[in-house]
Length: 326
Ligand code: AMP
Ligand code: TRP
Image (cartoon, rainbow, N blue to C red; front, top):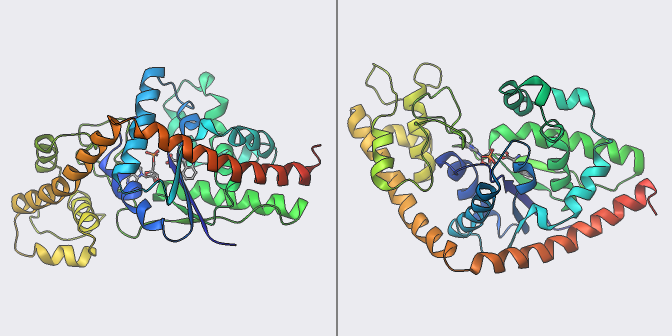
């Protein structure tokens, strides 16, 4: 079978530079490796409270960001998870094959649920990995490009596929997570021990930030008192994070990035990082706004959903037959 690539982003907030480096920027490179399914995980966005208007805006935003990042609707199926009912249907079956013990050990669940009133943890948040596994398995995806925070979910999907196939024969295709070498985990600029995420902090660069703001945020990034630009995650988390950002954007190794700044002070270094980020994001943002205001996004989503339905319904049928649903 040819290789199938699948990934998604959930429309829970403003996309960050972390999403760009860890996910978006790499997606286009997969388009020639096999059939690509890149979706917007809008059902997953409901696992934490979100305003309807925010969800709608974020969902269309991500579609436009996908296009701006170079995804070509003729070579890649871009769609909304909620437009393809097979996701919810496979979820209903697969929830019987993952266990509460396993789900309660997921790092993402532990982190997200900790912040909530323990009486009010939604079942959907707990069962998040079941839906994610369904997303992946529906497309017989062999390659799942994700940032390193998502590999645990892909591992669980593999366990599920194995468990299901042991019971019912060779029904599901085994997926594999592919994590980018440099930039799998971009940290907050104000607290480089925390992941840069859609949800919070002043030290996060948003993909819609204008160049002045981006520069300001990078120039005030937390560093250390050593004033040598070298990579050392433990002792120099701030500088290491900036080096990672620089290397990923320039598509060079960390070592090469270090060499560029052997005698540079932190001000010069930060300024070069800001230049690199702005240079990459400016054309990207321009394209994003063009797509967003064009109406093209809806056409792309419709076309993507049509193809996604074809493929996912075939898998769903296989699963129905395997478990004995008439
Ligand atoms: P999320 O924002 O959790 O929906 O993530 C969407 C995709 O972006 C996933 O593949 C994540 O692993 C990736 N991602 C999110 N935040 C970061 C980050 N700070 N660094 C690298 N990749 C990230
Ligand atoms: N859980 C992913 C995230 O938070 C988003 C996602 C949902 C996903 N379903 C997926 C990613 C399937 C890859 C494959 O980033």
